[in-house]
Amino acid sequence: MKCPACRDLNNRVIDSRLGKDGDVIRRRRECEKCSRRFTTYERVEDYLPSVVKKDGRREGFDRMKVLAGLKKACEKRPISVEAIEQTADAIERNLLEGGEKEVPSSAVGEAIMVALHDLDSVAYVRFASVYRSFQDIDEFVDELEDLLKERRATGRKARRKAAQPRKKRAPRAES
Image (tube, rainbow, N blue to C red):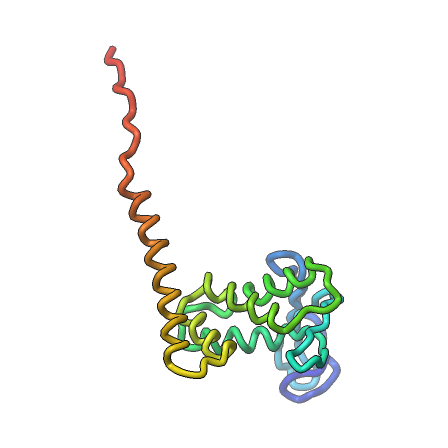
């Protein structure tokens, strides 16, 4: 592993820990040349499906592209890097569990859309505007209206549930 500061290959592992889900090993390293400390992550190499682009080209699934898209959509939003990485992990895990050898790029894009919809509505709209290539303001407004309708419907369900009368307890027998 090259040191990110001096590019030297000689370093030693100071600490190793399992990630939260046990699927990643986090290693703390120290460069023997410049003494800089850095962190590396080790994960099992999975056989992820190939992504079939719109023009028919095929390329391997790239988690970094998913992360870059999520980070760009979530820029300047109150969303932690950890939440973004967990979202990317979930998308990757779903692709692995699907067992397909090839998936269309649209399936990856839709998975990101669904995840962002649940994570943050502003990030969702940002990603949708690029992913769906809105041609004019009307398409953008239509997407926002759909989001607002859904939010209002969810809000009504929550208000109805809160407004339901609570069951009364039977009075205690006094002794």
